[in-house]
Length: 377
Image 1 (spheres, rainbow, N blue to C red):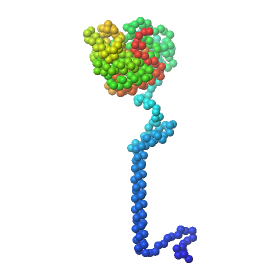
Image 2 (image 1 turned 135 degrees about the vertical axis):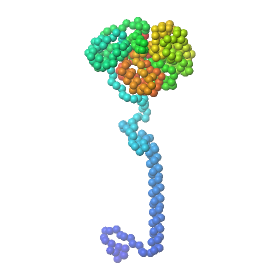
Image 3 (image 1 turned 30 degrees about the horizontal axis):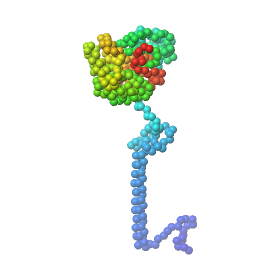
Image 4 (image 1 turned 180 degrees about the vertical axis):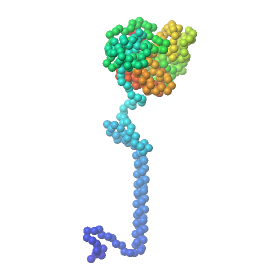
């Protein structure tokens, strides 16, 4: 009988026995210890290598996820400091939208008041009850140039049967001391974007953006800024926009002498012509702050200028104003025939303008420059 299998139960693994030799036991122990050390070192090294690989993968995680995500996946999850963050997925070659705040509100027809208009007249031509108009215009003032919102289902002003007011010259357009100004045609959905500017670098960017969208605006220039940055004039003209005069110093011109008024106008015109020979700000002049008097209007007229105001002041010059506030103000007060006033590009109006343009385009407004808006055809 084999001694190694004696008394071993059938179908059980055989137990290996060793002789009770001290030297053999010592050598076996040393071998086991050495084997354990080797196993430990191998395992530690693999763990270190794996940890390094994980760290490398974590650093590359956003790129890897962007590459591996399917084209129709709605979002990609990116690990940031151990926390999952959902980031919108965009096509690699897709144009990134301009960052904006808020949402576009519902479209609504409106009407720019002409001197002498009454709510009864507007209700009659709109084919709605006057009380409906009163309800949605709680701040109605009756001032010419103010926008009156029209209820849903109203007949739009472009379809009113009554004739337009007779306007034989630009001097007959309504103009108040506050600066309001509306077109000779306050029925067709047309608006003019105007900018009173000195100089900030992003003005150039906005001019190009407007041109790319097929919009021709009007830029009222400060002469002092043109002297310092004459390059702005060819940039305006090359993008298809028109020029106007906004004085030389931007001082309040009410109460100025004839010589002072002419100096403000002429120095700006000279700066523009020095920048681009043959260019001119005539015949458009917008007074600083919209502050005018009859004497100033007369002197400006003698010098070849019409004094131009606005229908909607965006208030983008107000300290702390937000893009939302500019958007709400303009879209709430815009109406057919409106001239909208903006200023140098700032963080608020730069974000608001694309939204305003989107709203007006969606509401079927046509963009024209100030000259097209004010001169009767």
